[in-house]
Image 1 (cartoon, rainbow, N blue to C red):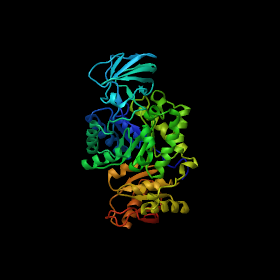
Image 2 (cartoon, rainbow, N blue to C red):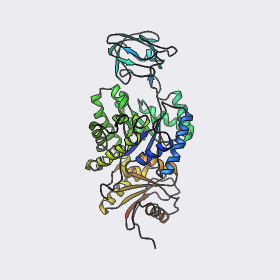
Image 3 (cartoon, rainbow, N blue to C red):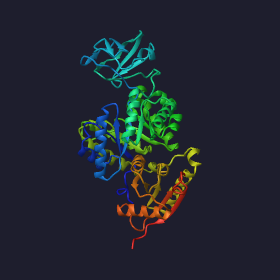
Length: 479
């Protein structure tokens, strides 16, 4: 398999929105390279999301390519309330932020959506508005009002974001809105849930417990966007199924020069633990309004691929941009070109929990065997997705085929680096599995007759077992 014919390994997440949620746009995004659709629950009603979800599944069927759905919970996002138009804040001026949100604000007094504001900030701390473009310094605190001096001037308007980089927020990571959205999303059929503003592993455990109570547990992607998350990165990674380096809020809450190092450290740590990794925010931001990326954006995407991320994410580019399909095509081309670099196939040292497990040993042996035999593909048959994910973790040069018997399992694997998901009928034996794999790969033109494949699975099929079987097989020509 040449570099040109080798499939793209790094997966692409597209945020859906007004620019991309129509029937034709969704199908075009899938054909352009979308692997995961992000539903941003900071916007839209449940009815809106259900309609887009139904259209996505129909487009998925037409494009004949599985797409995972990532539900992104809003979390305790703090915003300005309703303002009387655009408000200009001058250097040295006074601003009073209120914990009440029952009035229309103007200068100097403005409402916020956070009722605990006066309790959670301290005199001398900074408050950032509008993604950090405006900076305030707390001068005094009353019962419900926080009086500030403007240190970096600018303009603000209704619902602009508020960041409190020096404060330890007392609000829980899951709000009442998040819990209602979670229940709806799980019923709708989301494949993953992203948890916003994670501050400790307890936040992740709490979300998983709520899922158990609701009767359906899906993988959790923890968003690293708070200083507390960076401080507690190891336990958060251990508790999560994956992490997203959300560089937007992270770059506001922390000095921006620290973000690249945090990104690299987080990716390496998550990969050591065999967890999914995502790099997000402003990757091709200029393509929101222009048809070509900047040279800096090209390097940003390439460096994320070099660092071994499982997926890269588009936000405004596909949700509200002028060139959503072009942005996906560009991202796909950049990721495909970058994967030729040797470091993309460097497998990190893994923790004992993986290397010492039956599944970890079998999957690593499959990758080593495939390399020694120059096999055409490794086939991981799974009921929970762990086998193909571990195979991908060791970054084989050959293709990875993830086989499962249900749509939900197949879609879940669309998130995994280098894995091509395939649906097969339930096998009753090893021979039945081999036959199903042959039929799926040859009929779809994925592998030719004579191809050597390494198959991993569990035995027996009917029992809850980890991956514990490896088989070398050559696809024979049918008579």
